[in-house]
Amino acid sequence: ILRTEPYDGQQDAWPYTAFTIYFNAPINPDTVMPNLEMTPPLSPSQVYTYFNTWDNSFVLNFGAQPSTDYEVRIGPGIADPYGNTIGQDLTVRFRTAPLDPWVDLRVPGQLGTLDAHQPARVLAGVLNTARLDLGLYRLDLGEFFRAQRDWWEYSPTGRPIREWRVPVEAPLNKTQYALLDLAADGGTL
Image 1 (cartoon, rainbow, N blue to C red):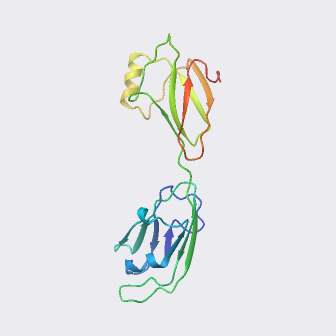
Image 2: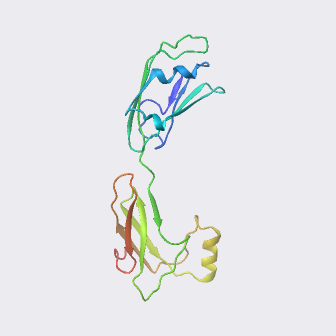
Image 3: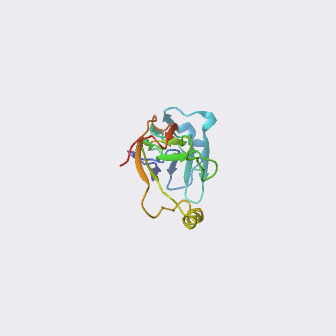
């Protein structure tokens, strides 16, 4: 065994990572799983494996979850195509990272309109964040079309009409929904 991904002691493995073992020579892939034990235990319905002959890597997709500690014990009975075993024990401990923070304003499509004479409320989906920083801007028609051309990189020009913060709560790695009252929530920064 040359190395593994994630490596032993890693604390920030991608939340839905596979576990990969890199060997210095071709192996018989059928001998890997009988020599592998994982904590928490593997669920057979979530396990998918394959062997890459181009880099001698055995990949175990096992349904890794975010913010979880894993321990993989690799036994010495993994064999090459001729029956020679590696004779090497290895234990790898790693932790997956939490999901990236995420916020989604629940409006139809990428924009929504609100009636200024009605309560202005927007539903926001939040994940792994404790606060929403909000800004309200007036857009002329040209600015509106600029926003449409590059929605994800767009940042409004000019001064905001209002800026405020809204605290939100959600369990780690679980999406929660918050109703934002745009007229009353928070206060001006």
